[in-house]
Image (cartoon, rainbow, N blue to C red; front, side, top):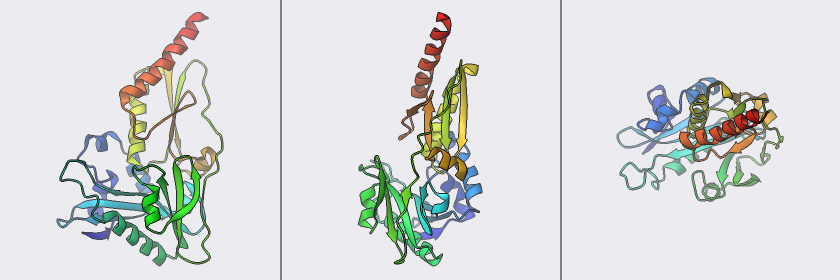
Length: 268
């Protein structure tokens, strides 16, 4: 294993989150590629862990916190650490120290760039991006919202802890005579992009009865207005997107709202 900076020869794998050979990678659309093209000029950094054959098997992506879904100053924010792993398969590379090596390399890079510290998010449950994994690497809790824990590691004494974006309470507007599907979409996460594309196709099944609205939360002003980077709503009601729901489930949810709308119209 060796850790390298992201280069053109590995961009395809990086944009597919190292899952380029899966149907989900193609299904997620090009939003991540557009996010990458936009953010690479805004301080986005990425490193890859290569196996002995030179294939990318792990990745970390991080950027200045001023461009991340959190508040802070002079920190770099880890969007994700991912090591390819499939249960019951020889394709799993987890448990070999790749994640730890990637995090250490990112911290060294941030220190060289003059960062005051590192921030990251983790889940308080034993799933992907576990908060306790970061704690084992010297991170401590700075803030928490629900199951999402904001963690940080100071690199200099004057570093100050980050905090989550304030909750704005903003919810999508309804539209008379239509079902409105609203998505906050930043583009950085392939899983969230997959949920958006499935919602897009599910909404299209009902034609003009459904309106899809996409909020570009890669735009900092929109991010601060909504207080979150990725979310999905159907007529103002939040839909869980982790893991990405199947298209049929989203179509059923939207279809029930359409049927309710048509019954109300018939009653009048």
